[in-house]
Length: 141
Image 1 (cartoon, rainbow, N blue to C red):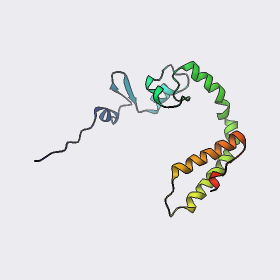
Image 2: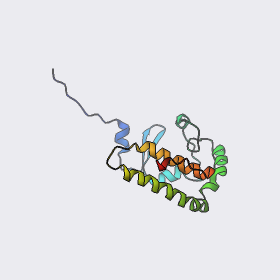
Image 3: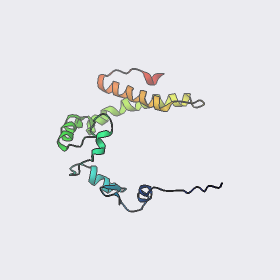
Image 4: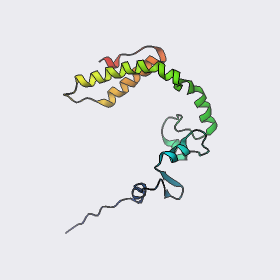
């Protein structure tokens, strides 16, 4: 018995490989592939509301919020953390912790390293230092 294997590309895959900046992949689902299109939909002051699919992305964070008023309130509480001045204050700390991560990688270049684990530990070190001025030292290991 002979079987032949056909390579089937789903329509959505064919559509999203299009060179058009906006492709309709379903009656109510566009695929946006241009920076300007993404900014228009997700940028500040947008009137677009996210689809119900965002309700299933886990713990509710700013990215998943569909209610514009709720998102605005959350943004107001954390916006000061991302001001130019705040980011400039954080930069030396982040450079120090990232240098420790780079050193860890260099010391282990000849053996397998679980980078997901070490990136999580680095994030824990940075957030601990920023929130409480205390580091658990995981990047020092």
